[in-house]
Image (cartoon, rainbow, N blue to C red; front, top):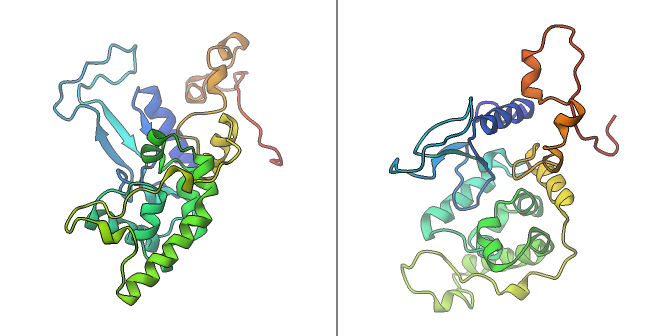
Length: 249
């Protein structure tokens, strides 16, 4: 998948094949993802339950999963990734959007980078537990960039910010996470809007698909999965289901 990350149609095909085998494909994560796609395990000790899925299902007690790499996020360049990984390895995991913004050099961070990271779900693991949605995080991007520029100016002057004054020397993790009211109240994205934005950031759907809600109904109309097309006889007439994006030809 790493080799094909610029060829999104191949990535989509690989994701579909992985899911068909029962292997979960995880979205990018600001603290857990590397640059490239990686294999992670639910049960590193190999003591997980062995799958009893049907034919074609992977039976592996390690529970392998595929984690999306941050290098596959559209609009996030090498310079931004380099400074994010430096901050993460130096002072620990990011606590939220504002923590990342204050610890990363503002010269290598821009609005497009933060918007893409929010829309693809890279902050979900740190914001969901606080009840902060992607819509609210997206609305806070401009505020986070202001915080980033202020923190960078302070560093250049050799000063510290208010949070930094109370940090324990040597303690990983940087500044404290921003208070919930730092994230503006925003109109929540419905499931379709969330998936649309996720696809715009990654080039494909990862956390779900618009057709999943109809998955149990598709066989009733005779529709088959795209992975089964290769097994059909030449010139066979078959039905498939798909989505049509507004404005697409």
